[in-house]
Amino acid sequence: MLKNLDPVLGADVLHVLRSMGHGDTLVVADANFPSESIARHTPVSRALSMDNVSAARAVKALLSLLPLDTPLQPSAGRMEVSSSASDIPPVQAEVQEEIDRSEGGPTPMYGIERFAFYDLAKKAYCIVKTGEMRFYGCFLFTKGVWSAPMG
Image (cartoon, rainbow, N blue to C red; front, side, top):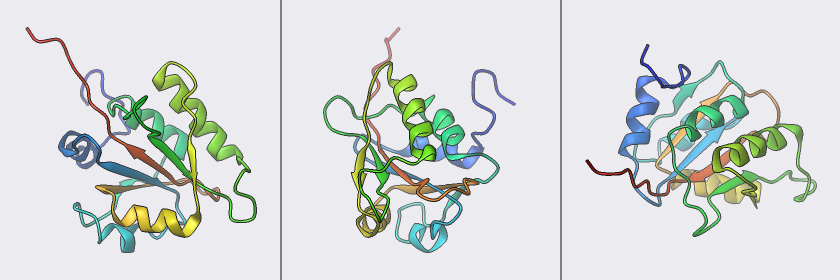
């Protein structure tokens, strides 16, 4: 264990978060998402695992370290519900709460049509698969910048 790090963040995930640069994207995927086959298209080439946690719990841990690229651009996307793009299922509402908490205020997610989401996921830096069993628990985050004081 390390001090001040969320214990659900494993070594592989920490390495990827540190390796990503400004503008790189990370996918948080539910258990039904084709994580392994899509991850083969990414620079990491394999899905990283956070199997034992919900999407909201994974996002909470990831955003404790990952700066979002806001307010410059929308930086948090969600897979739209196929039957109704404007529907926000509970899993997405829970993740929205974690994003807003992390960003210190409302930071709305933008919708991404399901098949467009798969295409964007193939261009992501990596895929993080969770144990989320609910449908539409898939999200795309764009890394921003962080300026820590020197000295």
